[in-house]
Amino acid sequence: MKISVARLRAAAAPCPLTIHSLDGALYHVTVAWEGAQRVLVDDDHRPLRYRSLQAAREALRGLPVASVTLSQRSAYDEMIGQPPREGSNALALPLAAMAPADPPEA
Figure 1 (cartoon, rainbow, N blue to C red):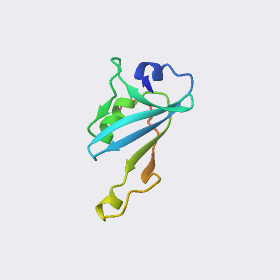
Figure 2: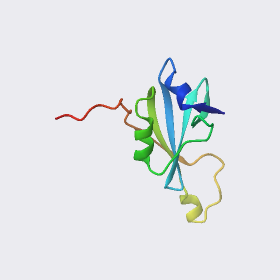
Figure 3: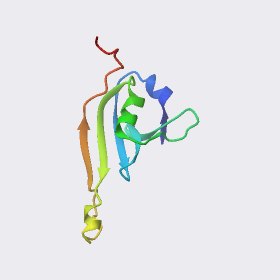
Figure 4: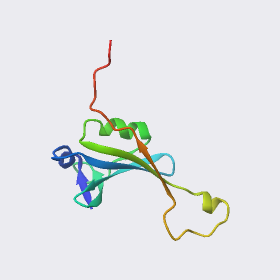
């Protein structure tokens, strides 16, 4: 399921966001919306992707955000030859909420 930036911007209440780290150099965003995780897409319904965590945070600034979490799956088990886990081994780190863009202080 998907949600557009425009629809998220028009949300009545702030929503939790999760920024997913893929391969350490690519990030995409999901939004908790109406009881489901939805991929954040552009106006052409293509998933938004970013090359850094900072680029993702800057692009999402000003949206109604309740919380932000960085999620990254660990490759540790695979690296040391362990069998795949039955459950998730994702690391979830809460990030500071993104405030609307403020002008720099003089």
